[in-house]
Structures are given as C-alpha cells and as structure tokens.
Image (cartoon, rainbow, N blue to C red; front, side):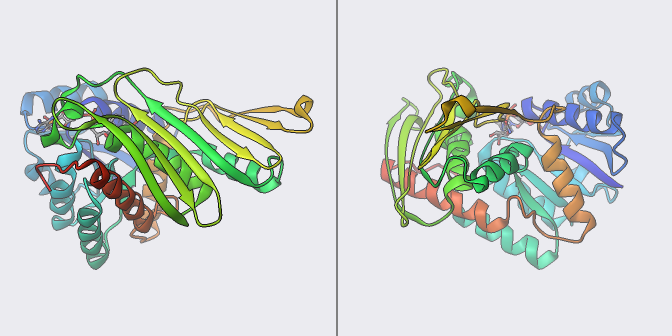
Length: 329
Ligand SMILES: NC(=O)c1ccc[n+]([C@@H]2O[C@H](COP(=O)([O-])OP(=O)(O)OC[C@H]3O[C@@H](n4cnc5c(N)ncnc54)[C@H](OP(=O)(O)O)[C@@H]3O)[C@@H](O)[C@H]2O)c1
C-alpha cells in the first residue's frame, strides 16, 4: 500500500483529498490517506479531519521526516515546486507535483537528475495526460475518420486574474504557467514534438506577468497549432483538431467530457463520445503514479520527464519572447 501525503492545504489539495477518499470508497486498496502538511498546524489539523487523513503536520519538513510517507503530492504555487521537489527527494520520497512542474526547464532538468540518481518516482500532475480522453482521442485519430490532423486550435481562459498566485511574479503567476500549459499539452498530445517554430503575442498585467496570449506553433511536417490562454475572461475551453477528412472537437481541453467527431463528407455520421464518469478526474494520475512506484519505475509513460522538460522549454521560449523573468529564477 502506498501512503500518500499532501504538501500544502489549499484549493487543489482539497480536490486531491476528495479524489483519494473517492478512490478508497470505491475499493482501491493500493493507497492510504496518510498525512497532510500546511504551514499552519491548526489548518493542517482541520484539513486532515475534514478529509480523513491519519496525520497532520504544521511543517512540511516534519512531514517529510515521517518514514511512513511514501508519495508526496505537491499542491503549492509554481514558484515553490523546485525547492519542494528537492526536499521531497532528499527525504527519499516519491513525488507527484502539480503543474506547472517547475518555473523553467533548467529547474526540471535538475530535479529529474536527482530523482533518477536516487531511483525515486517523480511526475508532473497534469491530469489531462493521464485521463481516458487522451486514449480515446488517440484511437479516434488512428481510426482515420478525420484523416491526417493538420491544424489544432485550443483555448483555456478563466477569470482568475485577482488570485494572488496568478497575479504575483513572486509566485510565478500569469496565464501561461497556469492555463497555457494545458493548451500546449493538448497540441503536443495530438501533433507531437517535431516543432519548427513557436510565435506568440502576450499582454501583461500591471504586475508584469502575462494575462492573455496567443501562441502559434508550426511543425516540421507542416501542421500548425493555434492556442490561446487568458486569466481575464471566461473561455469556452474547446479544443478542435482539423483533419484532412473531418474534425474532432473536445468540449474542454482541461478535463474533456465529450468528444465530437464529424466526418467532412458524411456529416450525418457525426458521433459524440462521452468519457467515463469520474471521481474528480485526478484519480488517473494517482493510479498511474502508484502503479509506477509499485513497478519500481522513476517516471510514468503518460507523462515522462522528457515531455515535462520539453513543454517547459517551450514555455521558456514564450516567456523569453515577452521578456518575462520570475524573481525566483
Ligand atoms: N490540476 C488542476 O486542475 C489545477 C487547478 C488549480 C490549481 N492547480 C495547480 O495546483 C497548484 C496550487 O494551486 P492552488 O490553487 O491550490 O493554490 P493555493 O490554494 O493558492 O495555494 C496552495 C497552498 O500553497 C501554499 N501557498 C499559497 N500561497 C503561498 C505563499 N504566498 N507563500 C507560501 N506558500 C503559499 C499554501 O500552503 P499551506 O496550506 O501550507 O499554507 C496554500 O494552501 C498550482 O501549481 C496550480 O497550477 C491545478
């Protein structure tokens, strides 16, 4: 059984806690809700009681010193991930870290080297990589029904510009690391890694971080992805794959619910696929991590280290185009 601990007791930590409880409630015996750590001990206690964790710690280090903790889920703003990943690995813990994994590729390369040297499992908790919708989309494309994918469009936008972790450069805020990362991953899952160029335009907040941007990626083999991310408005979250024989559209690139396939010449044969019902949608990344740990692997096939680093390199390039450097870099 893998004892799971959550580092940080904020918004996404609560969703992960509900996910773990839901997995156990439906009979998953491979995981245990072991502990939670927050900077404030009372808050950690309340979180543990509310969600059913065995232990609560008022310090991250104290939790990491607990030899019974096997896997740590890092649920803090982006600027902290690098140091916290290193602390987890130093204590011999496997680790699943929220997106954006680190603030830049250099940090990800460094922690990856440490995890590999220590033989510890480590992965980015970007849920869309692990969800069944990904396989469903792959299979639909492989069936040939939409032909060869040629253009991908995707947008992710929420009105969250006032959140401190989005506004503040010190927390590595901005739309790209929070939302753009999903659009980049969506394009990458469909069109792969043979990137020829990445071009973009961003508008910045008064704090200096990006608030909305358009990104155009071209591929060596002639495809194109046109992406948009914003923290200034409510987007429709749609992702569309335009193929030579039809289109595939998902209703939400940040947790697909339906996938609509329309053959160009036979629109009457359009089909809507519905993804399996979920606990929260985060259960798949947990299952993947637990499975990898049990098999002695240091990474997940669904989101290998190389892919996390590659996406971060693209985000580095985009930020370089906008002149955006975080204070923690
Ligand atoms: N997968 C998804 O769909 C999804 C959705 C939302 C967010 N996320 C990701 O999850 C991570 C956390 O996001 P969130 O919305 O949960 O963040 P949050 O609620 O604002 O903060 C999470 C925790 O981080 C620590 N923290 C926050 N601000 C801090 C500060 N200024 N200084 C030191 N520690 C601070 C706190 O830990 P303590 O409890 O110890 O005080 C807080 O409880 C990010 O990487 C984000 O991109 C993912």
